[in-house]
Image 1 (cartoon, rainbow, N blue to C red):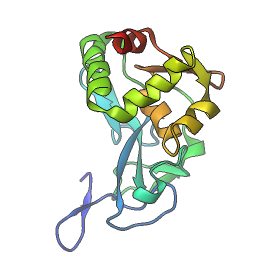
Image 2 (cartoon, rainbow, N blue to C red):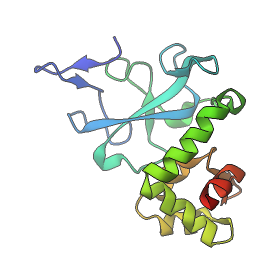
Image 3 (cartoon, rainbow, N blue to C red):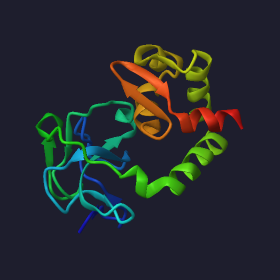
Length: 176
């Protein structure tokens, strides 16, 4: 069973992976680009053939901007407990972009057209000449800078050595 239910039959996700709060305010599910602690009980992808081994994080609304969190889900969020984030393997676990080319193009287009927050964040980087420090990016996109960096990478932003760079795909899409 992937989730539990409260006494009214509403799904629950267990305690927040940052503050430990365990109520109906724990509603944010995040995929971490690292292997989870329990194979077969995380996120995966049928398009790229990734097994369901990716780490998951559930956060309450108050901790939605916290990254990295204190814990990750050990397995299924409602039932399998928590493991310290620091205990995750550093081995990357992510989609194979070559297997997602068309979806990637659609994601970029939809992100820029349908999400003004994403477009604004990318325009900040473009206005800075295509790159800026992570600190400057976070300040320009306060209070959501860290989440935007995570959500927009790697398809729209490239993160290297404390700097944020527009990807070629993002630059081309912004020109349209």
